[in-house]
Amino acid sequence: MNNSIGTAPPNEEENPLIQPYQPYMGQAQPGGVQPVPQASGEGDAVPAPITSQAGMSPRSRAVSIGIGVVSLFLIVAAFVVKGEPERFVTVGLQFVPLAILAALAYAALRSTTAAVFTYVWLAILMLLLVLNSFILVLGVVTNLEAVSAVQASGTRPTMETLDEIFKPGAGDALLWTTLLLILSVLVSLAMLLRPVRVLMSRIIPIDPDNFVHKIGLSILTLILFTSFVPLIALGGRPPILELISLDSVGLRPVDLIYQFVWTIPATLVAAGWLIVRRFSEVLARLGMVRPSLRQVLFGVGAGIALAVVARVGLDPGINSLWKSLGWQPTNVQAFEKLLSQLITPLGAVLIGVTAGVGEEMAIRGLLQPRIGLIASNLVFTAVHALQYGVDALLSVFIIGLVLGVIRAKSNTTTSAIVHGVYDFVLIMTSVFVAGQAG
Image (cartoon, rainbow, N blue to C red):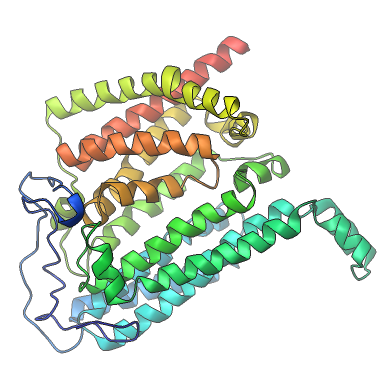
């Protein structure tokens, strides 16, 4: 059995890679987790078993090498190219490392060498996630104008200049960031221990003996925790909205396209594409199907209804509650500045398609069948924590629950339609309001 962090994964007879844990096969799971119908309504599609071999199959080896070469090329290109290619590559570096980890984890069930590389790559990703959160907080609490002045003077920083470089409260923010990040890493590492995974399997539908689940649970835990750390350390102020005042650009329509181009293949690889599943099997695993007319009509109607409820009831209600309690709501002006170039009909379409399809495939398609409705929705909320305050995140969590239930009762395609229409309507409402104000 795979009982410790450093133990190599079991072979195919002990823990088959191609026939992964089936948490939703018609019965409730431990801890009250209910079954989630898959794309076909008959459970998670499983590819035909592959006979056990010593080491990786030629296809898996070729794919792993190919992914490694592409990743190396991207890393090198990120330091060489400029302009739009640089921006495209930079966006890709947010998704490719996770796809590599997934590919290595799948390959590890066939190869001890791949298992070693999986742990090494996991450690690298942990370091990068921790550094990203710390740098975000550091960027918020640093007075960049003072830093530029010190650099221009060519003198070493003194205690007086340090007081000018760092904003009030910087020390406390950085201390909390450090402590919370250490805690996040420890919790993430704990997920590599089998007794902890057995305990977790009582509340979320994972297989504690599945190596892919093991690695996935560890990295998802770190993503979840480190995404919230800056928000907590900064007293509820999302770091991106704090930094947007220093950058007049914000998100551009083409940035959404870049994200979408990287998100889709990364999600497919994370679901086993090219490594253990054919394309049709991956789509079934993700719950992506050709929707019926009834599902399309339901998706459009539900998306519109959800947007109306959020616009006139949910968001104003949460905002009023926050103000009545004396809490700081999300900085609307900064958020509007972040999305200023997307408050157009084209932006509404792009957000509807990219967020609707991309986020639903990754969250409701990839994660929900493996870690359950609540845990996957927490991850969904966490990935918004860098640009939303706590009040807005509460709204995101509630909307995510609705989308998760829709996916559980139908398929990911239907929840994607609902999500896309919901975002489209919200942006178009903002377009209309902006037009009226103009």
